[in-house]
Length: 213
Ligand SMILES: C[S@@+](CC[C@H](N)C(=O)[O-])C[C@H]1O[C@@H](n2cnc3c(N)ncnc32)[C@H](O)[C@@H]1O
Image (cartoon, rainbow, N blue to C red; front, side):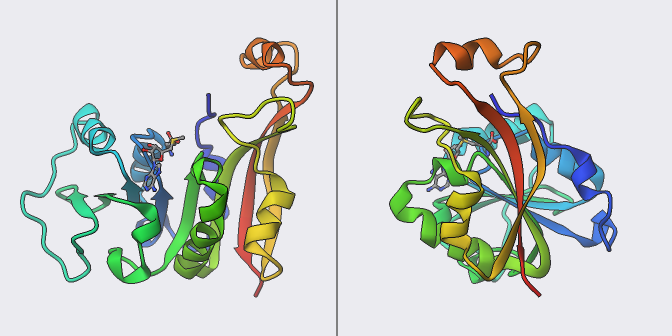
């Protein structure tokens, strides 16, 4: 359903990937994490489903540390750490995360693929507050989502959109679109399935939420 991450988003970074940390909330076993790792970033994900985490490490043959220990490890999140320490996937509830329960309290990039749109509406403010608390001052919080009329189709995925994000991320942030394309154009692979759902417009969007300096 979702598009893959596009490495072009990271072309104009001020630091090299080896100096940067990416947070992937509600990561599932998204292959994006491997792409980020292969680009040289350190990747930290949080995911509720143990099976998804096991699949990620097994499918990509990434060996894990046997008995990891670190001051930030909490009983709320079971750590799964690659031997080189550059991939950390925590099994647990994203809404129970704090900057102190993560291996880093600040991240240069947050890659949200289908996470914000999966969170219950009543939890979205807490989720947005957590993201802002761990986003570095000049960090990018990229949200990979779809825009459509929720009255035509209830989801999933749920519609997020720029206006929906403004409500939760507020005036402290700038919210810009970094990628968008129409998924109902004639040769698009999602066109037929979305037309069958009754949608008259359906666009893929990646939105960047940044703190205003
Ligand atoms: C729509 S999937 C997206 C997965 C992944 N980001 C991707 O792009 O493939 C949502 C994921 O969030 C996880 N999830 C749902 N609620 C969660 C929570 N409260 N804390 C952590 N993970 C959660 C689910 O287990 C599922 O893997």
